[in-house]
Amino acid sequence: MSLVRKFATVGGATLGSRLFGFARETLMAAALGTGTMADVFYAAFRFPNLFRRLFAEGAFNAAFVPLFSKEIETNGVEGARRFSEEVFGVLFSVLMLITIAMELAMPWLVDWIIAPGFADDPEKSALTVRLAAVMFPYLMCMSLTAMMSGMLNSLHHFFAAAIAPVFLNVVMIAALGYAWWSGTDALSTAWYLSWSVLVAGVLQLSVVYFGVRHAGIRIGFRRPRITPNVKRLLVLAVPAAITGGVTQINQVIGQAIASTKDGAIAALQYADRIYQLPLGVVGVAVGVVLLPELSRALKGGHMKEAAGIQNRSLEFVLFLTLPAAAGLWVLSEPIIRVLYERGAFSAQNTEIVASILAIYGIGLPGFVMIKALQPGFYAREDTRTPMRYTIVSVIVNSGLAITLFPLLAERGIATAEAVAGWLNTALLFATLLWRGDLTWEWHLLRRALLLLVSAGVMAVALVYLLPYAAPWLLPQVPLLRQVFALGCLLVVAMAIYFPVAFLIGGADLGMIRRNLKRKPVKG
Image (tube, rainbow, N blue to C red):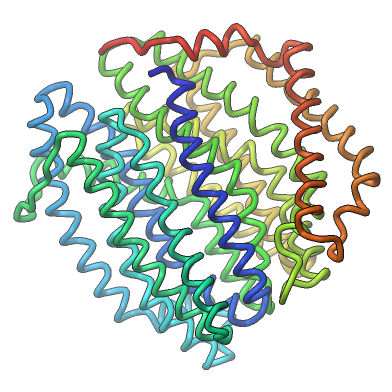
């Protein structure tokens, strides 16, 4: 299967998950708005989500996949199975200890890390503790899910791992549907949602477990022992855990600062959900597929192949994220109004969330390029360098968020995250280039500039067309007409961007055809 087809497989499954996520957030906005209960739930949910990114997705995609791939190359599937059992025994035991420790420390964690702004409201703080305690075991399920997803990706079985996140959104939508059907209040709705997160974690783990069995590997439980392979994994995973969760780390910092203002946490979350669509579809697809592809090429000594994969991935990222960024900037307000403005979500909420989304749009290409650049380090078993740059970006984000929040409120936090993301991208790119692990291509720079021009032409056209579509996008207009009008704007945007990009040379149709047909080089 070619690189682009693999991107499409993972991206398509992720798109399905994100669309269900939109439906979930739309229902939550209608049920909870940006009020107290929304703040409490999102604050409680952020914590297990942070640990999921730190100890699961980031660490295992970065550390486990290259080592598992090496075991397959060296000792075959049986050797890879033994290695995965060694890791499973240690991981399960460590996660159990972490879960128990965090459950006991939850009151302190909420007051000092998750939402220090809630400390002045004992009832709000106590509810956040209880909801977080229910959801935290989700970390254990998701960490084991991430390990098995890494196995599936290394075995070139991408779909099961990519489709598993859909179950979180489906179960949460079911919880919201039940809350609406039974007419429960906001507090009960928050409780239903918390339990649904835990149920979804179990379902996601089941999906990838059966996917691994279908791929021909049966995992048994081994007594936890620190073998040389496990020790190497830990050495790689600790810095990768910090690096992989950079966005979540920055968002937790932003949340801690935002907790001093009512509704700020929920507003950031609603905007985050929108920009997570292109970030997830493109960024996750590139990150998931690129790491095993680069690892395979490097282990086989195909350095030219590895360089080509890296550069084409950057080209692919820019081709899709630059128009998405321009679209989010211009259409942020109608997007938020159509998706969220109903029930408890007011016009004032729309204005605030739209301004945050527009800023996230500026940072979007940088956030996604991080996903395309980090595998260049991880495939070479270097997880320390991205960690150092992550620490720099976290320091910059914290300083800017603290400085800008009194001036710009939630927009200041979004600005800090966008700046930190672009800084991280620049450091990763410059280092790969300096080491010779990234091949400089002038035609790649030329195409990037032409894609930027194409996105600019598209943005100007949308600014011109928006007043004509505005009467169809008002809250009093039936929802289907609003969706139709917004959909037409998006279709027109694509009808402008893609032809312009191909006509002026920003994209090469022949290159895309070759990538669709290209077969991977055997290691």
